[in-house]
Image: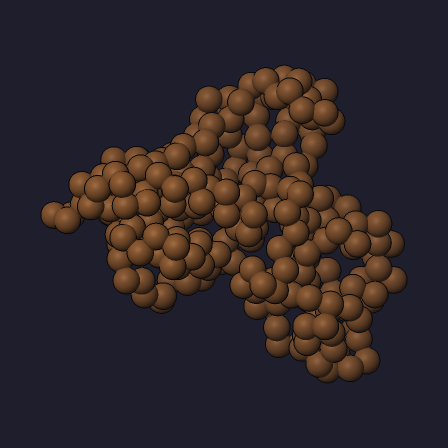
Length: 241
């Protein structure tokens, strides 16, 4: 059988393509066998496979996860950072977009007669970064995402928030894509509730932390003389589905 694999961020750069194909003798096979085939057929990718993550049908996969030719398979580094028909018990707003944020419009999606507080977090592009291995001066960031999986994971984060803070009554999660300059906003998380003391502060903090763990988004820091893809330290597993 032949399987098409989508590539993102550093893996896309290594392969010089956003998609590759491998042939395997068995259908179905496993993720472990699939990775062996990728390493053999695409030597440029082999050094990155030990740390790479695999998604099968937009869910994090382990080495023993079965894979067939009908599955949607993606290979990507740890994230830096459609559920269109899904229904949720409270208002939500999820977006992975290259459009500027309209924060007032997003708040309007979450508010209503029972809402007395909305707590939000907004991330911005920094011009100066004091971290080893990164350019000291940033000109801009380039963001890309596995968009359909990203939206599904945003829905998962909302459900996790409601499980922990059941009085939160609305959740918004937004990740911007494309080239963003210094001072532009990159991420937005908001949680709504009847009062400020029903967990909205804690839920918003959890939302941005979890977004950077499991939503498949990557950024490239670009300076005057170099560009570097940023990979996270957290490695999602099947328990994160």
